[in-house]
Length: 292
Image (cartoon, rainbow, N blue to C red; front, side, top):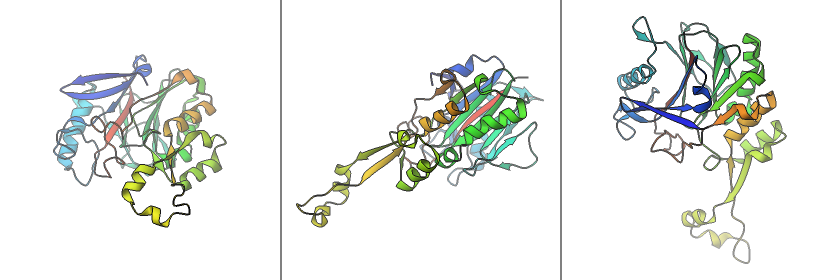
């Protein structure tokens, strides 16, 4: 995803270049930089309510992040609608902020003047924009949501509510963990194989014999004659490609799909990574909205 980086008050927001050309659209992907959280290395822009961080710091971070977009309603930043994310395929159509937080992993709207937001720290944030109907959607796609085809179903929900045609959709896949780092088990590969005919194209295998030898220096003693045997292979899933293929299958043109080159696991200097930081990390946020 060719990306623009905008910075105000030393806070960074990443944007998908194809979406910046849509005059009525507001969108952005946060980083970990320039916040008020003392944890996660200090000065972190943690936008999720986590065990390690204080509610006050997160609320200050959210206010600063949302204020950066510069859109106000009655003297306050636009309302932010988030979900209690559950790694599902549940998608909600919203026209106003709900009285209570909804559970699910996707939001769609055609209503101006509010922001739809999702938290991530490895899973992919995916923004869909219907440039003809002036409607938007945002989706949280980890391996479970991807297996459940959440972005594919998102296109379907936008069609149901707004009359969206896939050919009119521009999609942006934000920063997340990439195939270089996203190691999974055989059970994940088997589940994808049962759902997608192209599943073999989404996985790669790698032998990591050096790290295994360091961890288990006496492993050779139990090896088959003549004193060595094949080391187990690591399996890596390409979540970006998996979701790109789903978008293509729905009919979204390839040239309308942009994906960030940033891997959360590789770039913990810029982004949070649940996997790389062993669960002790903050949350980024992706947001999308329609100008009034």
